[in-house]
Image (cartoon, rainbow over all chains, first blue to last red; front, side, top):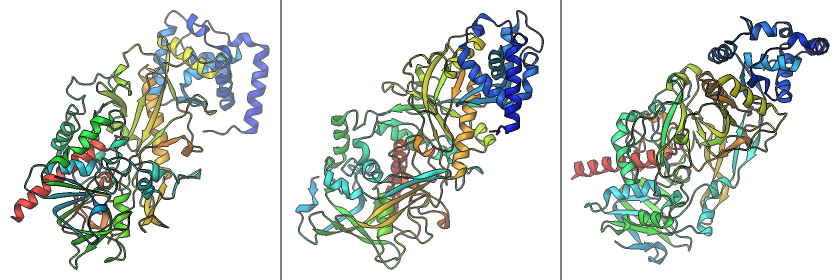
Length: 112
Length: 510
């Protein structure tokens, strides 16, 4: 597992501080099911992702919704998640194996 | 034929037979069953009585340690005494009855698994697996790995090259579940005219003739009585620890012990372990948030009344990972919901949202193949038992390759389930703390390993000890590699195969 450098951690914390002010930049039109995901637990996962990938924050929405949000968002998300797993693009938090897309969704929830 | 209490025989009595089987456990009984009603005079020498006895059980005691990279050594001094039963019927007294054949890949020589490869493949063993199933009152397992006596096991999710179901079934011949039924199974061979069971008869030395063949066995009772046993053919069937212990302790005619010219006796100890964590584990709970509505009752490992399945990584996946075999066994008991504000709650809800189906969390455990390791071994300790025999010492060692294999397999299961949209997997076990996540089984394997090459093993493909023309070994100690299925079905199949071989030898000798 990648070890977060002290510098990286400071960058991540700085990023979090910035978006907490401008949280709207990370708001997303989630499906009702995703909107109902436990925000505290999701935010913990999201913060862990950002701690390891501090430079990811500005591009989170584009990464999760590369084609924008529309009625196909749900199925496309599932496709993207499954594709992540097939190519082993995986993030592990407290033993849970998540796709990178799912980790980014959690990061958006953390930042919103 | 009578069952004799050896303690009642006169001092220095001679027990004679065509075949002497040392040990009346599941392997020894399987051979006796095959000879029941034949012209061969067969003697079983059993250390215990019909039922377990604490004084006799203490003959098994011995020190033990588990070790592995990145983990503090774990003393397991009670393991040798508690993980088997020294009585007629052996560990069948506590056996739960779970059975399945080894996978075809388990017999292969695999680059990722050191010292792997049996002298024959599963095809050779198939007819003996069938007869073993008949003996243990099981439906037969088909050659293709499907469910016994039933339709092919349905894939879970889309068929892919990552994982598949592998069948298991419970034998009713289980001392733990049906003591009366097991007692009948245990006693049946002794009712044949040509089978003579001697109880409380401990083989303490294998004495060799000058040509390396066995000349006689020295027998002692806990009362101090000394006896001798002599036969044309001898079969050691005392279990995966005691077979090696007796061979190593028989130093009267060979300083290295019997069958130990190439120094393999006692080495490559393998024992299946269950790896998991529980609800209370601070690292997290090994669980799967399933998002499939599929019927998972096939995977109910507690279903004793019908065949069931575990998940296994496909051979191609194992080879791609450079890993050994690994199985995932599901518990289908419902679990309480995850606590609010926890990552597990978020994962469960997020997976349900992504997959469009409600999630249900189920526990599981992994079993991961331990590669044969010459340093993982049974030796003789400085302690002696009540018979004056050196006690066994178990030095059970895992290697970094074992840890890597487990981690790669756990990841493959987790990713495989999720890629099919079946759910999300939590595997919170890291290398540090691995040993305390392990639950050792009663399966002891590998200590008299089978190899066609005398320089690389103890017995040949017929289970005959290299260099000893009339000495054979039965039981899981001959397994070169362990696979991940409970060993009783395979050791019974091998015992039946050995019985056929011995009959053939006797015919030839006439």
